[in-house]
Length: 223
Image (cartoon, rainbow, N blue to C red; front, side):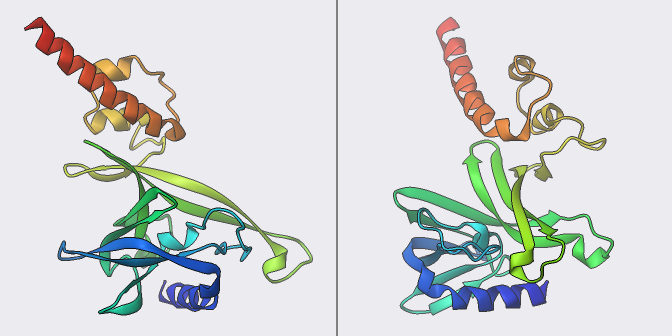
């Protein structure tokens, strides 16, 4: 892991010219918040392609470069801070540090700290992380000989239950079972299909917040 982070840091430094600084913050491990500037790259971490439009979030699952007048420009990793956020083109992005479990034959690599992006925050928090898959091209070597496909894992979190990956398995059951475990009301869940997809959870949580609001208003009117 340390070797990977060192390589990542060197690469990030080499592509600084293909980046911009935007307003942002970091949250330190003691809970205090520092406002400053965050470096937003627009070079893809896997392909090293320059993104003409938008930005590349792939860097932010592993590190963030943050600057203030007092501290200068520094890289921060998931072990260093609780999280960070920034504003880019009118949209806010928030990341938090979490211990993520991996499938590995190496015991020390089964749990790693990583930044996860906060997609939704209410009674429950929905988070995601990038999962790149690499495929070697037969007969070719180096970066040009590898294709990569990006996918995403999704997680639910709250103060009581902690972090759970949204995946269907024997331990967790269905996505619907995980939502029930995290306290989503049974009456609401009964109106939802049994085969809820992890990609549908974002819109479902928004719908659930509106459902709770309408339910509370109905109780008040009946009284």
